[in-house]
Image (cartoon, rainbow, N blue to C red; front, top):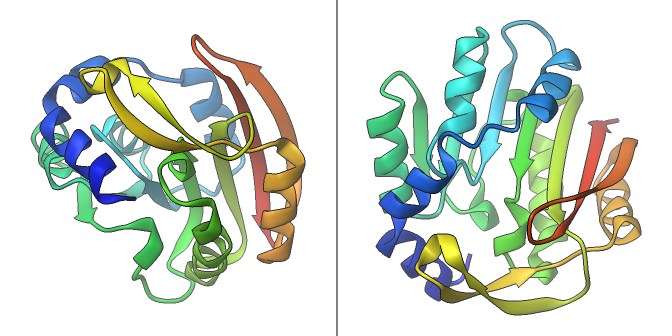
Length: 199
């Protein structure tokens, strides 16, 4: 994540957490849970307020949330005291090989450079066990654009947009197979959602 984006998340961490913590994507979370083993170890990328880590804990899983914003990690730890959280950039993932059964990446890849995605996915693949499940959700579109983000005090931040085919190709090249790929209309954007599996 670039420095300006991190600064925006640090500055408005509490406001962002207030906006998002109760906005649970229950249907998608339940679909994800239905595909993974009981007591699975889950890596939540760009975990933000810790909302989804909290959800996974309630269902008996072992989640770890990472985020590049120090203040977002502080918010997550205060809101989910039983959760495990680490300050970590997606561009420098640092976990032992085959540590996780699943990855939850809701809006995580939106905040990194598109040129960094292949390396991130390759590293991510190594941290996963055989046939691990990955869920990725990104904004539909092309290129990288500055947008005014209401949840971050209407600051302008740089966001990466993807087409379904583009993200599918990136995942396949990094050693994943595509299980399900679909788009979904949100309040402000159309979302590309992909379920993939490590080969």
